Amino acid sequence: MWVNFYIKVLTKFASNHDMKLLLQVEISGDDNISPQKVAEMKAALRELGLDAQVLISASQHA
Image 1 (cartoon, rainbow, N blue to C red):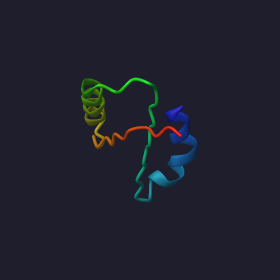
Image 2 (cartoon, helix red, strand yellow):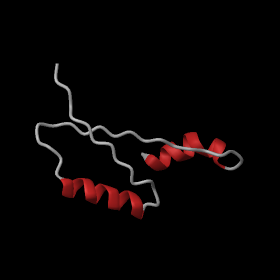
Image 3 (tube, rainbow, N blue to C red):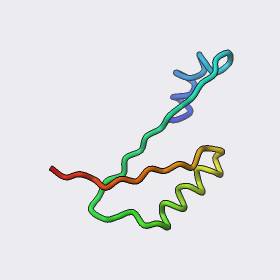
Image 4 (cartoon, rainbow, N blue to C red):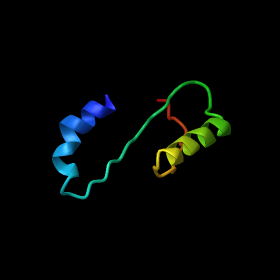
């Protein structure tokens, strides 16, 4: 999916424009996300050369 997104959408701009891609991921469930899983996510982001900034907020139920 990511390769297709890059080829079909981003390549038109990648060669001669500055580009910034923002990704938002929302993970929901009844269980809290452990600090270990957050640390693993940050490590994986750094390994990919990405910013390891992770924002964690409590879900709001109506």
